[in-house]
Every structure is written in C-alpha cells, then in structure tokens.
Length: 86
Image (cartoon, rainbow, N blue to C red):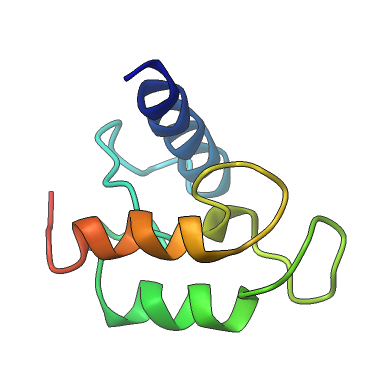
C-alpha cells in the first residue's frame, strides 16, 4: 500500500511540475495530465516504451512507477485506469 501511495504522490508532483495549472487530483496513468487515462496516454507510453532516463524518447510522465525506465509495470498502471476520468 505504501508503494502505491508513494507512486501516486510522484505522479502528482510530475504532472504539477509540467502543468502547473493542473488540478491537484491526478489519475495514475494520465500521462498528459488532461484528467483522463485514454488512448492518447497509451500512445505517449508506447512512444516512450523501453526508454531509460536520458534516452531520446524518455518521457518522465510515462514512468508511472518512477523506476527510471518505461516498461510493462507502467503499462499495467495505465491499463488499470484506462477509460477512467477525474
């Protein structure tokens, strides 16, 4: 439970830093911080899939578990919230 709370906080911080006008409620998997976990977020994750910190296709918002790489865990996080909105 603690790890998910930690990840949720990191996601909030990432979206607020990139989009300062974003509301404080953030949906895990909402990579573009538009309040929805949808096909656009899946496309952004797909574009960055396999990237590690410093890679040319690195997207820090797609690193949903904040482990320094965009991988299957990030896809699982997005898929659990796919179709949800806030």
